[in-house]
Image (cartoon, rainbow, N blue to C red):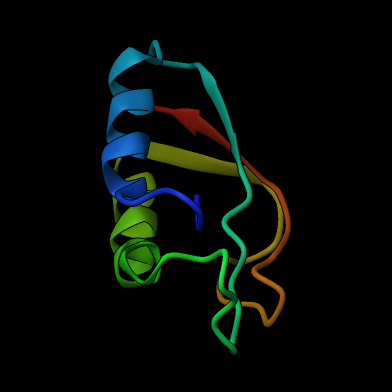
Length: 79
């Protein structure tokens, strides 16, 4: 997600297509030092993505997204 111009739009589209009870896997890397491959717009939208996921999904597995390495892969179930 850190490599697309609008990861929020991508997650909204995925959630729109995903049936209730469906599973979404995501791994949105968090970098303290910006990487040339990571888009500034993606960094800006990061917190909004997790707000959306928490509203529309239940976190089934994975570490918290605010961990230094981004928390690795998380598994979400759509409500």
